[in-house]
Length: 240
Length: 315
Image 1 (cartoon, each protein chain N blue to C red):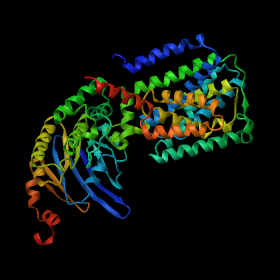
Image 2 (image 1 turned 60 degrees about the horizontal axis):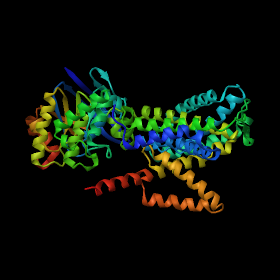
Image 3 (image 1 turned 120 degrees about the horizontal axis):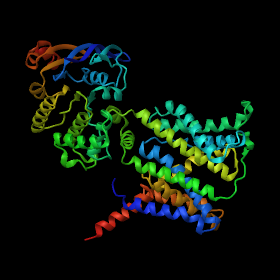
Image 4 (image 1 turned 90 degrees about the vertical axis):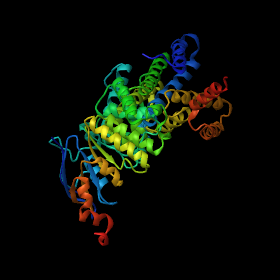
């Protein structure tokens, strides 16, 4: 079943065209990777889908319903939740309360249900022992996992992960990839942007490549990596 | 149900004593306590918005003034009894707060503070000019309005006690309710709260409208108590700043902070005002600076620190 359709989305910031007619569809339970060099428009695309930015042209359709122009809170309650490139927290609340807020407001859980769910998601990401700590005391790797627990707790079927593995070491990346496979097994659909190619190869079913705001390739990760246009976009003319 | 904490137990015991206080003491302590309750209710209402939702409102005096003049109009023109008038004035203030809050609460950070400060000054000018501009006189221009004389002072003691208790209970409830978690999330990181499904504007507005009710009823009660109000004083920024200073002194974002701050500042002003008639404001300024420097989280933070030290000292 088609979950998300991005229809010829263009986003301009003044004279800068950050996204130019980007389109793709996403099937339920899929893991889609979005890759591209710095400034290719990955984060802008995520912001448009999550309601943080309205598209200048085009449309985003979720479960057959146009969601462009809705605010981020409405998009989240409809079922799309996004992590932040720089992991965000409610710094003076406990780790458990951070996740609790998402469960309470993401899908309107009661206080007792939300408490239970927050505990379960923290256990899922391996942060159960930190639940009473103030969120601001977490390390970068822990913040990324707390942010993941938060988006999972919203109950959103579609999860957007914006470079959720940046700054992690090799072992941590492997653990994160395994965790995201488990997220899919729990019935969620994932869109992932990532700089770490190895992570994308081991994770995504399909990748969309962006360059200067345009889609230049799409397909299974191994095929796309061999594509001449993609290699050129990443490494420049001489290598192509 | 959870068991009340030590602080909540002490507060309940204090409330029991306060309920019976007017039976045991003379007029002066009751009047002084009424002043403290009034400021605790006002500061407490401000604390809900600033301390829990992180919106620094520099125009809460608008609701105070609206409450005063609406109560006066309802009593004088409609002949309604005081309590009915004050509650209706609260409802009027809620309607105004809803209309005003819808655009202003979208302003972030300092812009909201500046916007509300400007709003309060415009409200004052409007109140001063009202009777000249509108064929339905309300404010008496710069001359003000006299309210009917009330018999006795005990009524005001109990009304203000109810208002203070109501605001403090609301703050306690916010610490453990869904609404409260949402507000704290908005206060700590509004963009993340929004991305987690919180409708930040609706939550903020609900709180703004609720606190407007408390402030307006307090304003109406204060007007009836003094039996005279005028626009310059009812919409004075000094009322706002006293609410802010008392909350910060007592402890921003804590349920009992505004009560502590109101009691402390009122009692110190009362004590010093009679002894250092000409210099007491300078001394109070010094005390406020000292507390902000040495106990930035306020008096309630200081008390908590003391308790923690005692706990750590135990074997």
